Image (cartoon, rainbow, N blue to C red):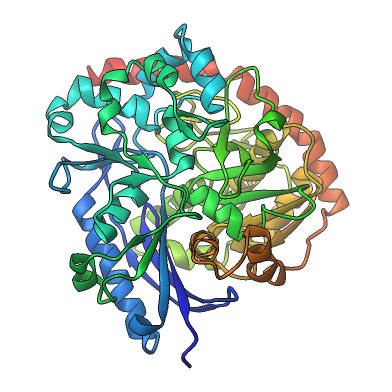
Length: 521
């Protein structure tokens, strides 16, 4: 086979994947390499930037081992990756220190201060995005207070995919989605001096790289990157948008009808609707959510985001594995995950409430509270581990409804991707909670596909994104799962209790946070 290929790179928090696609969107091969990160005291989450680049290069080399003649057949590369966070590089293009990830909670107090400040209303009016500890603005302020040496060494503040684009091409750039949600205006797709002033970061303007739209302009694989990856120097390289946008694109958010929603149920939970034109954006009064540039002119995605989605599942399965290990029984998380749907089907629906705020950074949508924490409500002696596991999954589904409800009417259809979408039971819970049909895309790597779709438009393989979506997405949509009426009725009764509980809990969360802070002092 000699068909040209597009390669999409999706650099996640815990794994880096490279996927080779035919020009019509069919996946040919996938390679993956783990990406390690480290939890640090005080809620920190850091990643070795050089190690992330080495893992990316290794992923591409492994892909070449699986695809005959990949070097010659690659028409272009595109890269997306985990969003938010702060990846600082010096003038030589080397790391200025470890990357602060989106999971890093240490800027929580700073985000709270900014949210209460007089300038936050103007900042939100421009960015359309609620402030949170995961974002680069609060993290830069945290670095000023706690690691000024890193900022002194830094020449450019990147996000993960931008850092990889630098290593692939030698060019310093970011994309319109990350630039505007952090420091810009979604109407102009450019940096906003008013936003930088509201964040008290006007003096850091020189750190911000050029904004490049990857559907219109691409770089070239450098000689150094060619040696590291085994690919051909000069190969076109496209800078994708943030991973959540690329995943939404690959999962079908760009739909002719414009009425479908898209949920990415991964480590985080992202719930989106498409907006045609900046004038159609309705900003919530409580200044939450994201308004983010989409890789189509005059088009945006409005989003609400749960900071933790499948992280809750990881936690409960690791808890079960830990109990088993204490009795000498070894089970990996993946072993337990294989049987979790059967386990949940044996448990009654709606027996417990679980608040799925397991991340150290608290919650960012549809409310923002860095002190928010997970918890079970309604426990009694009759509940067992199957009830707990089912409640965790139901909490994720109810949180999705909470997010969509904050953006307006619930969608009639939701297209789901991410690791959580593999669970048949979770898909049925989402359908019942939202009262909407749920579809998957019959490929797993929607983020890499979305990045590659941007390359297909940039390189002229497709005339525009709608033509690309007709080939890359529509044929891959799975069967629609209609909501089960009985389960939908159960969740309709349960949701008001879920909502009341999360509205009542902030005083408890804040007292617990104060107690933790006093204990750490």
